[in-house]
Every structure is written in structure tokens, then in C-alpha cells.
Length: 394
Image 1: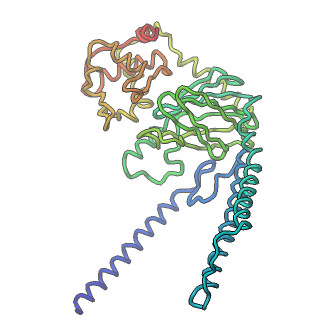
Image 2: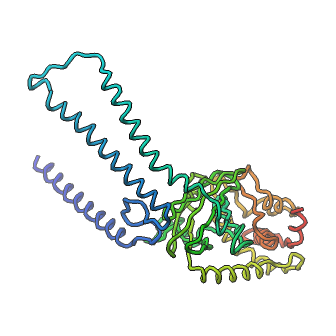
Image 3: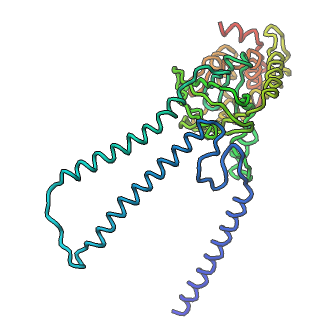
């Protein structure tokens, strides 16, 4: 018996020591990550700090409805527990024998009805304002892809600008490692942020290329579904500059966690400079599709395109994962008939599991196909020229 007691004491001491060690590690890890301005905070309980009037109204409504619910909870359960304790059988009370009360029936129908109507009336003004997308200064289309966002500036200053916004490669690498370091903006960093000017009404038109996504930025008070074949819209007017973060808020597949949204709100002067620089960048990237490229040039260009758009699913080593087919050793990639791979890049495959990549330029598609045909164990020596992509688009 003494031996068993001693054993249990030692085990208890070791368990307490282990618990203390784990707690200290958790505390260190939590302290290592700081609040992300415009994004999530450590041990956050409240809504994100609002930077738009709509977000402020949403937060006010949240508090009002929360306190109404708290008052109802306290009143109902207070009466219930008072009745249970005050009129319990053990102190001599006997249960009353009655069937119904018209007054009670009317009261518990009318009172909740009035409360619900009151809350609805308070919310109506904000809901109507959320849907008023007229008179926008800038209109931007946000297209959801598996798994990234595409942005097209449709109207206003910056019209004609378009780009894809993808999770930064370094963050995907951290996630794949299984042991990501403490990072304030973990899985929220993108390669191309959506840039808008402060104090301007920004209309966001949402749609999707494959499955249902949702464009959500809490600090802006915006959440709008992006549905294939449909066009929805919402808007915001940021009242301060800064970086604001969100994510796809609709479960859209295995890479759902890797669809961050980064909205950079800048001054009007800085926005004008960004527009000018972005248009110059696009003009420089708009390669002449009639240009004849050398194999090594296309491979080098294609490596960058693959890392930014393809590696997230097909992996950097081209081996694929689960239902995602491998590119390394793929029969279609190795096939001498280049039109098969070109068709997949332009039109997608497997009912949208492989998205269409028509948003890429002719040169980028030609480059990434050439890269896959000449990388890893694929040593075909084949190359695809941009002119072949131009012809295939027709």
C-alpha cells in the first residue's frame, strides 16, 4: 500500500510539472504573437474595431441586441429559479391546479412580438444602408477562385487595373511545415493587396469562378457571398487609412483557409501614385504575344507563374496531394500534343476542381506550360509560344 501511495504521489508531481511546463509554453507562444492592427487580436472577444460608419452601426446593434438578450435571460431565469426555490415542496408548498390563463397567453405572445419588432426596426436603417450601392466613386469586381481572389477595377480612378491576390508563398510554406513560427499576420499576407483611397465609396461586385465563396472584411463591416453565375454587390467607405484583413467566409474546399483578403486604404495622393505605377506595371507585363521565346526564358518565367498560382495545389515538387493530380510525370504534360494541356489551362477540368486560368496572360500560360514540361522528371524539351495560346483562345 505504501508503495502504491508513493507511486501515485510521484505520478501526480510529474503531471503537475508537465501541466506547468505546457502552460508556460502556451503563455510564451501567446505573448510572442501580437495584435494585428486591422485584423485579429490576441484573445479577442469583441468585434473588430470599426473603420466605416456601417461597421460602427453594426457594432452598436450588436451591443443593443446583446443587452436585450441578457435582460431577458436574467428576467426569465430569475423568475424561474425564484419560483423553484421559494415554492418548493420541501418548505410546505403545494402545486396549483389550473389549465390556462388568457392573460398569460396574451402576454407571452405580445411581449416577444414587440421586442422582435423593436429590434427589427433598429436594424432596418442599417440593412437598407448596406444595400445602397449607388453613386460609388470606384467599382471593383472581386472574383473568388479555388483558392485566391481576382480583382478588376471596373469604374472610377484605376479603371482597367486587374490582378490576382494569392496567399504569400512564405506563409503557405510555414503552414505546410506543421510548426509555423509565431507570426502576427499568419495566413493573412498576400502578394497583391486590394488598394483603395480613404473617404471614397467603394462598390464591391462579387462573383465566383467555381464554387461559392464569400468576401468578408470585419473592420469594414462587409460580408458578401460570391456565387458562380450570379453577381452580388456591397460597399464600404473607409474613414481612416491602414491595412485591414479578412478571409473567405464560405467553406469552399480544402484550401479554404488559404484565401485571405488584404485591403490597403491609402490617401488620395498615394492612391493616384499607386494607380499610375500599377498601370505602368501592367503595360510592362503585357508582353507581345507574337514574340518568339527561347526555352530557358520561358522556363524561368514559368517558374515564377507556377510558384504564385499552381504550387498551392500541385505542390512545389509537382507531386500533387490527395485528389490533386501530380504534374510531375503527368501523361498530359508529357504528351507531344500540347493542345491538351493548353485546353486544361484555358478551360479548367474535373468540373472546376482544376480552375480555368484565362486571367493569366498568353505569355504567362505559355511559360507555365513550358516550365511543367521541362521541370522535375519531365524533360520533354517541348516549349509553347504565346502565339499558340492566342490561337487556342479563339
